[in-house]
Length: 282
Image 1 (tube, rainbow, N blue to C red):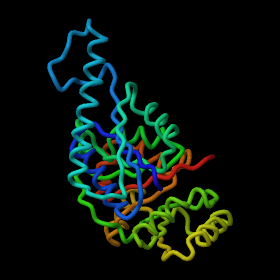
Image 2 (image 1 turned 90 degrees about the vertical axis):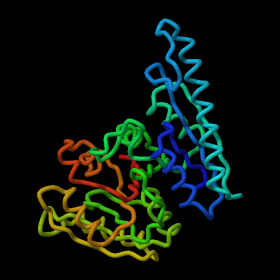
Image 3 (image 1 turned 180 degrees about the vertical axis):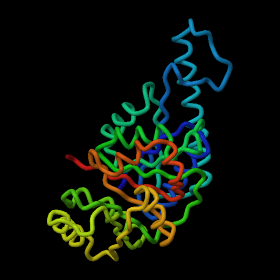
Image 4 (image 1 turned 180 degrees about the horizontal axis):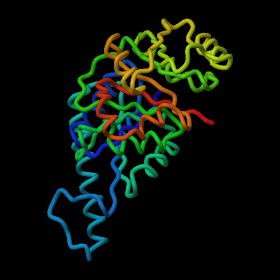
């Protein structure tokens, strides 16, 4: 992974995600693209203009975006004195998700890293709205969500949750394998039991998964299905001291359901570790 995109709304959490990314890739030659998007609904930091001056408003938002990005660049250069890293600033007019998708394609991005909450994030939610939008919009590369104000610590245990209902291939699993090698981390494959036994398709997919995990350190774990899958998964993460959670985002998969669960259920899922969501073609 050499091209990493980090969206920012200039919040502390967004900067923390950037710092986390530079720390995670400390020994890798990388280009970090720092992206800020704005449109007519973006609040001005300075004195607001009249709504009648729409062109003036956009121009001022553009100026503020560029100025704030320069501040972020200055700060990360002070915090990250690493000759292996270079930074490019992207200030784009438009809605967040479409702009993000365009930038991922244009700059051949290998990974998107972002904070789970923005400047106006509700801390009771599992993920902020922009993080959810990013995971839904970006299908060309993984998205790594960094929890609110998470201090950097290299994950030495990566949980990979799967129901074994989809066939695995090298392309889908490469981000997981890469992260394991990058962090010298063991992969803990976790399955939440919905039935007493796996069916033949699940068994075949599990065997394929295990073959792809070689020669990386890995193990298989089985969890009972509690009141909700989020409760089962949270228990597993807490008990094993997992440092990162990874899932493949298929259509109608557990990840999809997790992102759509009611807020009251999401509040029981206090994910305080990085969350790697890997897209998969259907």
